[in-house]
Amino acid sequence: MMTSSGTTRVVRVETGPPPNDHRGSWLPNGAMITKRFMELRRRRGLMIALAVVTIGLPSIFLIVRLLAHAFAPKSYGPAGGYDIFTSLVSGVLFIFGFIVAAALGCTAGSIDLQEGVFRHLVVTGRSRVATYFARIPAGLAIVVSFVAIGYGIVCLVCSFAAPTVLSYDGVNVPAGLSQRALDTWASSHAEEVICRFNFGFENGPPSASFSSVVQNVPCNNGQGRHIKIVGPPGSQGSSSQPTQAEIRSAAVTIANLDYSDYSKQFLSPSDSLMIRTGLWIELEAAVGFIVGLGLGSLTGQRTISVILMIVLEVILTPIFLRAHIPHMINLQRSVVGVATDHLGPSSIPIAGGGGQNDQANLISETRAWAAIVVAAWVVAWTALGAWRMVSRDT
Image (cartoon, rainbow, N blue to C red; front, top):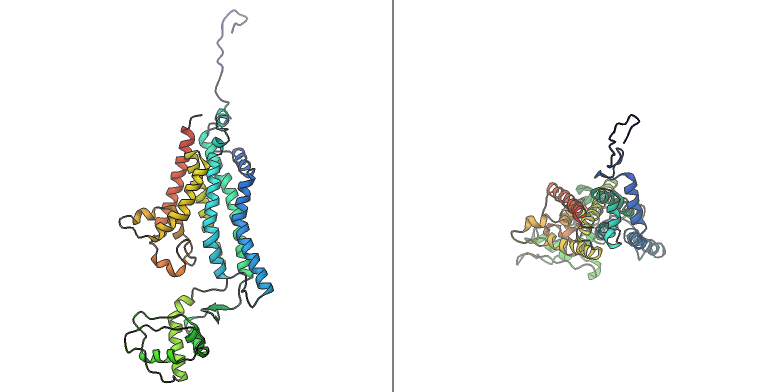
């Protein structure tokens, strides 16, 4: 540049971004997160599927039970209760919540390539890592909201429409009794306990007199429940008519035998159980979304990624939970589905595990190791998804 005095002055022109331009930062800002949230929310088909699975399925099931109990209370039990709560949590919300969350994650991870807008995102100058990270809070806001609404409906119905009397082995028993109180109740309802309670002895009955009492108590004129006593030859006892004292003693013995199982039966879920279970379900859905997001970004294909996530949850996880494969137990424990199952409340049956009575047949895993596995999967798939987005050619 020539000055008035005839000298030349060099002017340096800054071609880089202005000082307040944060487009190169790997941390997403609020505008980026909001934009990704709106992109996902505008996919109406996916939003409808999320609503149907997380809110519609449990709502329809509970509405049908409410109507059935209202019109035929003698034929259909109350709509809610502890058993309905555990069934809906482990059989619907836990499994299908993971699947729809994974489907949303796979969609979010591959949406730019599927719609052909990845090149336009790159030319804006925004950090690719920030673009990827912006999808995590955006997607979680949707997933967590849908799961929370569906779970809230389940908790409300199961708490306020719970049965007032506990039905244990077909017998109406007061809930929450101590072992001594259950013994007292069994003594006054001896014939019901002997005829209806489920019991058995691995090494035969405790005495020959017990076998004689049980086999000679009339159960609804022979129309009651068939009771089988397994024991060595000669342990079946005589056919003499038992006294009332012997009948009460046998009923107390059966009540003591069943108390461990009885103590796990409740009329409705407790507040602490509902809180812990809700956090567990949200964790499962969040893990499904984050893993699906990384897998969708890695493959660039939504359909293939969704199928792989369904296979993981519906096929591989139940197999790894139940199969005791020699020299591969630690590998089985490293599957995220197995780990999240073991992080749930102990009173909730593990999904795909066959119910409370089959939990002993599943592979064991400590909660500490399960938490490490879940954290490792989240970090690893987040890193893989972000790396693939950074390294992908435009």
